[in-house]
Image (cartoon, rainbow, N blue to C red; front, side, top):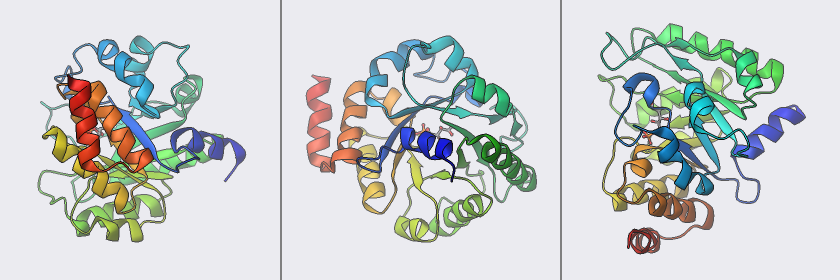
Length: 260
Ligand code: 5RP
């Protein structure tokens, strides 16, 4: 791996713990002004100091994050679908590598839809993105999106993660599931977990705790942070679990004390 690629990856996966807390606010690329992201700048500002990196679209980056910010950026570069369209799986690449480089990102992110009608398109898009990333030393995060008809189980998510790694993704984002450690064992690149739909804060902390304990290098969490009734408390608690191996109970107590 070249120096630049390694340097960018180490901006995301912190060398002192080999872990990461990635704050995901890219949801608007297909959901529009989803709750908690109506005003991205207002949502991001108070929680940004506790994130290791920020996953977002170029539109939100340009309008809602100060250029003087030193937060490493993971740029969402796939899209072309919407919640009211025919299929969320029919994504393409929506940002050129040149523009990503101009935006000084630390990585680019693209979703793959294994098992959907657009499996081949999204997997070959991943390959093209990896080719462009390798040319310029820009790491690629593959997001294993789960089609409606798919079960988020170890077989399916394990298949998606391994395919993403085989095609050259440098980091894979998937979901936590039973026997998650098997996915980690069978995937030769680091894995982060998405939080998924908003659930109770304590359950979301358990998710993060179990995932890192079973080999994930961290989280790429969005809704369970910015839709929480105390986003700052939540990201601080997640951070303590991911980087300082805090217990769920202690992390939940931290969240509750912040909420007060
Ligand atoms: C949305 C995404 C998000 O980046 C990913 O799902 C993480 O966010 P959340 O924790 O809210 O699931 O890919 O399409």
